[in-house]
Image 1: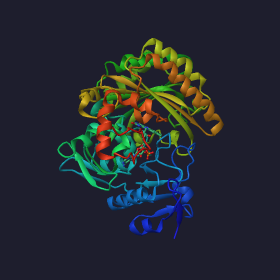
Image 2: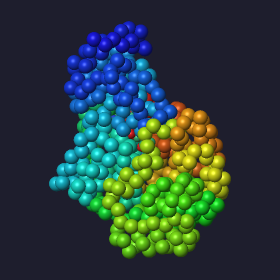
Image 3: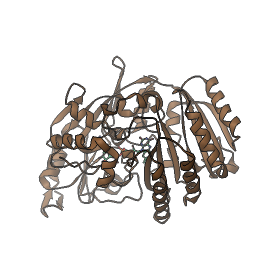
Image 4: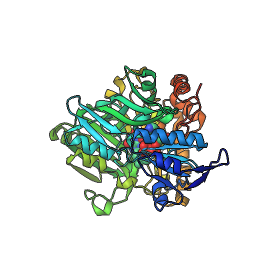
Amino acid sequence: MTNVVAPDTGTAVDAGALREAMTGALVTQDSADYDDVRRVWNGDVDRRPAMLARCESDADVVAAIGFARRAGLEIAVRGGAHSVGGASTVDGGLVIDLSRMNDVQVDLERRLAKVGGGALLRDVDAATQEYGLAFPVGAISHTGIGGLALGGGMGWLTRRHGLSIDNLESARVVTADGQVLRAAADENPELFWALRGGGGNFGVVTEFEFRLHEVGPMIQFGMLFWELEQGAEVLRLARDVLATLPVEFNIIFGGMNAPPAPFVPEQHHLRPGYGMIVVGFGGPEAHAELVARLSGALPPLVEFAGPMPYVALQQMMDEASAWGRHSYEKGAYLTELTDEAIKVVTTQVPRRNSPLSMLLFYRLDGAYSEVAEDTTAFGGRRSPRFAVYVLAVCLDAATLAADRAWARATWQALRPHAATAGCYVNSMAEHEDDRVRAAYGGKYQRLARVKSSYDPENVFHRNMNVTPG
Ligand code: FAD
């Protein structure tokens, strides 16, 4: 018998009752693997939950929620554990760990992927690419689909096929009162609307169904890298080229250090500058032309182009964003990359302290902009724009203190040039009420009404929290 003292009531709770009720393992502070299992992606987050329920089924999730509520334990829900702010863990509470619910099945007839709520992007890519299929997800394969998709989900395929949520067909959700519901256009439609952008506020998603598209398995990859002093020219070039670029291509670009990758000559490894990754989903000729157009306009220090499997593209930046680094981030939307905004970026990028910190631009247009504003709860508006990620990534806490200040200063300086006061909810390390309201803008009140229907007591509050009302 393992006794845990519930912080809310001060009474001892017998964890054995939950252990017996679950198929999956229950990890408590006296378990040998406790320190391993409680770790999250951000090395700067070090919390000590009372227990972690490693759920393997809907029934396990129902049991864990019921147990935590009866015992007065705060609940955190964990998919891939990549919340930079540490939303998926909690001191003294119960973590519903979905990492074992990572099965991905492809239904070829219906062209759908059934994805477990705790799957990682790499699980998704491996299963769907076996058939040359995919749906839009993020660009780092160790991220969880749970948190990523519930906040929106943007990546290489977003210009072509929208956000992850734009491809969501249905979700199976365990609610705060232990019901297992299906949410889809024809069943619990308000819940379905809210899940597409509203984060983990409404329940625990144990399975998603996503629509699939033909992608790869080979894609065209290109990487260009320029000197730090050429920042303004690189950003103007990216802006001008992206404005006319067919959705068969995508470019992620920004201020960073050159990766120590095999296609980067050794003398340039970790050199500070500006990089562009140029991906093509069509044939090699058009991609080679685009890379030549970019390098012709502004000759780079490093240029590489060639075919690559889509799954390799998805894993390309994994190491640069490895587990355990001390991290912090701020986000913004820019509808225009004006010369004034470029000036802010080129002033701030050289002020980073860690070679791993970076400032990245994702392009949102094409299929992203074809979705009507009210179709989903996604906070960002659908007009073409750039999502800006200001990422502080450091090997130790002391450097993070400096780069956290850098990220905040960069964000403050960008604010006058931003499209709205809000940003992408998944690029927020802090979840203060006013920032969450700003992120959802005019959709906040509708989200609050859905919240009061499905989680009136705000059981699921370790997220970009919407207050029931
Ligand atoms: P977790 O920390 O497990 O969860 C985050 C939040 O979602 C928590 O509030 C949690 O309770 C909730 N949640 C998770 N799963 C479920 C579920 N099944 N049911 C209910 N609630 C759930 N975003 C992009 O859009 N594109 C990118 O390319 C991208 N790249 C990233 C790269 C890195 C290295 C990192 C750290 C983040 C990146 N992000 C990106 C942001 C990412 O979308 C968020 O960090 C997201 O929260 C990660 O989801 P997760 O399941 O791993 O996180």
